[in-house]
Length: 302
Length: 231
Image (cartoon, rainbow over all chains, first blue to last red; front, side, top):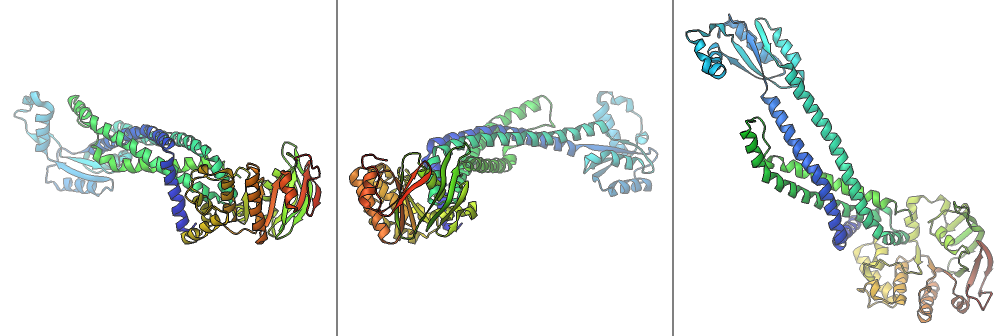
């Protein structure tokens, strides 16, 4: 198809959106409503995902050395080197006996800290706080640390890690499944709405075919029309969700803080807006194109 | 130009619409295909536009064997045939100019060519001043002229008119037939499918008569057999 022909047919598609205002508004409304459910789901998913990642990122494991070793002992240096050399280690911080003592006294025992009066920090081991790159092989990494000479204990809450990993996997799989179902539902609704538009112009399609128009020539304006309605509908949906999200984000984050859940928070809309817009508009456009292509196909057999 | 060779058409429900039909129409000829309702005229038209495929037999138009045409070649075939319908079949939301231009646009003609050719075609059918009108603003006769202009715009070697005067009064009918005659005089093969006795009798052209799906008469300068009955 030549460029001038393409621009003519594309122009016809845009013109149809304007000429069939009522049908276009209905179709856009249907797209907007369908994708709104998708958008809400997207917002929830992105927030859960971000919070799970944040929890995973902040998760640390503790490697405790033999208590007889002192801060500058070469054996401690050897342990530190072996930990840092592990490819799954993102960061490693050495905790001195004095630092551990302070944590024990002021953060853990607090009011009962007097029991440590007159005691030295010598009984506490030097330890390392380690952040891992990949938590899914955390057990393996912890076992590797345990096998380092002079490491006494590795504090790795395996069950918590496994639960976090399992939750994350479920969220990903669930998101794919629900997202797919919602996209299909949206496509079905759009396809049916466009089918009405196509049906209303069945006679025109028939005439075009008799005069010798190719299928592409007949189909393309409907596809452009479907795409435009998909894009505009999804843009409306995006604006409504964006506005609603920005209206409630402050309240929800305050509630979470009040409840003492500081590790969880809703993402700022600006952090998710671009990806969300692209996803929704992309899905709207694809769904509009496929929906209209399906609808127009059966009328082309003339 | 047109060769219908032992064509039989049987629909899936068992109805036999055409039975062993054979005839030829030469280049530059003017022919009427007449017959009662249900005689097989519409089926024959559908076959000539490759909307349907015959159960048996072969069809050749412009030297092309229809049975060997692929689906994607159908648009090309239809562009080489000008077609005029009883109900005009104009695109209601487009102007007269755009309706005629549409047949050129599907051939990917340039804007320049369209701007030049469409007014000429409209002038030929006497609608030079109605280019900006919409079909609903025109009389039946004028709408049929637009249909004619659209059929002619790509200079087809063959023009098929399906009951072109079926929705027109006698004066408009006569004018449309006169135009078809002029078009034929310029070398285009014209096939008119009709059941209007007066037109057939006045024109004195070749008549192919169908009855119950079979050709029962093929006469040069033919007439309706029964002068008292409109077939």
